[in-house]
Length: 281
Image (cartoon, rainbow, N blue to C red; front, side):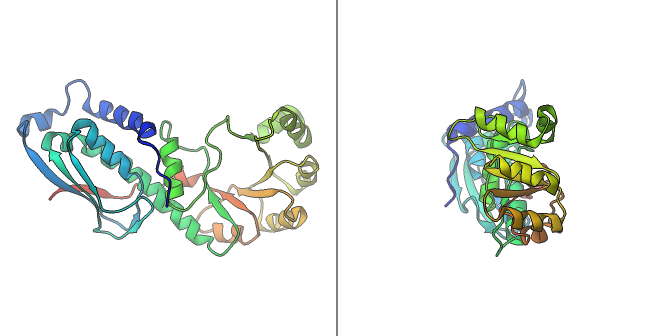
């Protein structure tokens, strides 16, 4: 089971999206064409194979405009579904359903696209020890939802923001003068519950990083041979994360070097929206 996000976290996103769409005068097309008391029944149908994520967004979008509407969910987030599958049936005020349609589909399609792409990466490394994780390369305002979609696709989450873990990147190293100095400063600052990760870009920096005992070492844009050597050198002493140059053609070979984690920015910055439609029943 995938732990769903609470409505409290999602409602502000849905309300903001609805407000953006409804503008100053509301849905003038629905107002012009549909009687105020008309009822409508519709289905959300998937038009291409994929993994569903974000059904709660569709439910909340409809509920904001018609609290009495029914939302009969036919699939669960994380389900792999075939083209033609009905994932939800809705019934309620016709104006409300049509006004909420685009917001519901935008969020549902976007999150399902992230989940679908994540599942492809997870399947590609099946049988290895490597786990697929996301990055902070998310759509502004949608990070919680997109990272939830990654979990729906079988991936795991990296840090959510700048405040929940220390990640020393190349510019931090440059500002501190060396990898070792940067890690020493970070460990002196961090509380006992905060992990420290440092990015290195060559094997020459590996021993220096190891000497300071960070929790995680990120191997940035390493060749396959260098990844393999790093895994041998570290021998399980710290978590090794591979990053950079990762795509569906390369991820299997990266995983087979023995790294623990592979971070993939594409999960959230390049996922194709899953085509889902709303059709009158």
